[in-house]
Image 1: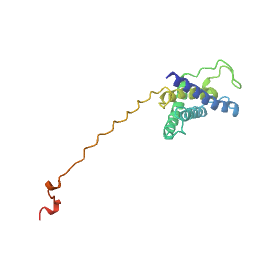
Image 2: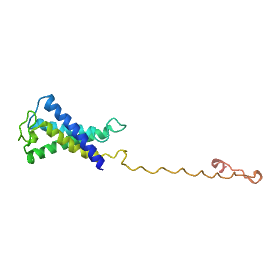
Image 3: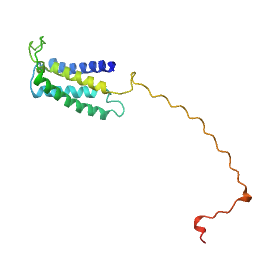
Image 4: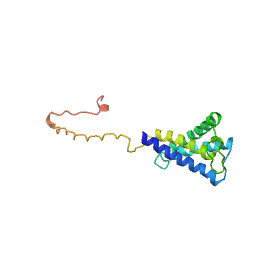
Amino acid sequence: MLRRFVLGLLKGALLGGAIGAAFHWGLGWTQGEGLLLYLVAMGAGATSGVLVGKPPWQQDAWIESVLKAVAGLGFGALLYWITSTWAGFGVPFALPGVNAGTPWTQIPLVVSTIVSLLFGILVELDHTGGGADTPRAPRKQAAPPKARAAALVVDVEDAELVRPPRERGR
């Protein structure tokens, strides 16, 4: 369980950090408000939903990945709404292009990392794939060979002639 927690934390932090870094340094978008940050949070949640846990390229895993992505969209929007409404405290340090004291809910680098990290932990803890920490089912024992029935010997002299059902009434 602890292994899955740490794995989800690392995967989520890497994915969210990569998304946030693409906005922060790639596009030069260091601060924002409103709808755009909702979209960043939703994108980070959906991305971690697809890539954390059971990978989508495994056999029969694409449905699960789509459902996790949809759940990540909702989780990202809900988490951003809750945190921007009640937990929008200022960052105590300065980032490149961002002053100290700016609310963390206005920095795409931080928002995407937090959302992806938290949803990555949830998805990885929910993942029940075959890993080293899942117990294996005991192997089935081979059934003993079946006994064969003895050969049926019929004495022809004592046998009666049996007519088919449609000929009996004639």
